[in-house]
Length: 416
Image (cartoon, rainbow, N blue to C red):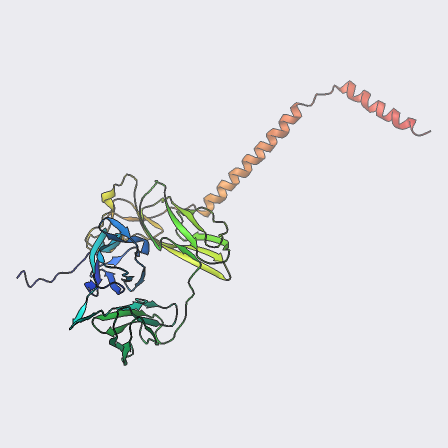
């Protein structure tokens, strides 16, 4: 019975095409989940290589498509190495997780001996995947010391037999017809190079944006009334100044510092502030508009879980049940939960009490408030005039009569 059970790997893992490598070869791998989804894309800075305890540098590149990270690494020398991918964020079964994975890599030259002669067969594939940026081109390099015969199986089903002399290379160009296919090389070992082509039969080249971010997704746990911030890095990879930068988000409790112009090749810290007023699960985007040669927009996705004041870290762990299974309700943006709530399976903020409408100020009460302000202003003005009049000295009747007589006499003197 135990042997009949099927095992589903709910944690991230790395699947490497081959287990043994020679110096100069290309390692092709996938980082994926059998059950769940990544909540933050892995970046190249998350991938480290070690020889023993010493960190070493390998040329590598990474891309993400339809839930899978595709990775390739050029292995320049012999040795026993460890690949380490740290702080992978993911969600499986409604539960958020973080994991670091490691894998051993063994690189050793394999000598082929025939009689008194020995030789090597080593192919290097560049690049280890193609993704949209240009017409797919794969270059195969013979870095061994003998000729190598191999077969190319193109994604469209055709094939080609190739013989390549030592230290020579050949480039293969083709047009894919599917969103995801593989360029297959069959020789002393098999190489499957992913060809990612989301636009299908029509090739549409995409220009890489000048402004890029260290984070494509920000996943954050927040508590009502507690202001927090997240600092990320922005990079101008272009050769032009970036101007007219504007930052905005549809989530009202998310604010930002102002961004000035970016110089070419400049990188800068960018702070994002969170000050939620109500609990819930909020998803949205931060959009940064800028002008280089043309107007462009950088998008950073937000996935924010907010709990009421006084909540603890363990309160963020979602239930394994759906909101319906808990007999709860999901409140709208115009409602609040009048009682206890929790995150249900799938990350929804499930109200276990009743959803009540958020009170808004009525128009009549608004006019009444404005009327009171006007009356207060009039009263204040009257008081000021009264105060000024009290400061004027009163005049007796006989003095007032004498003043009028003198004014009349002066007018008469002016008329002979």
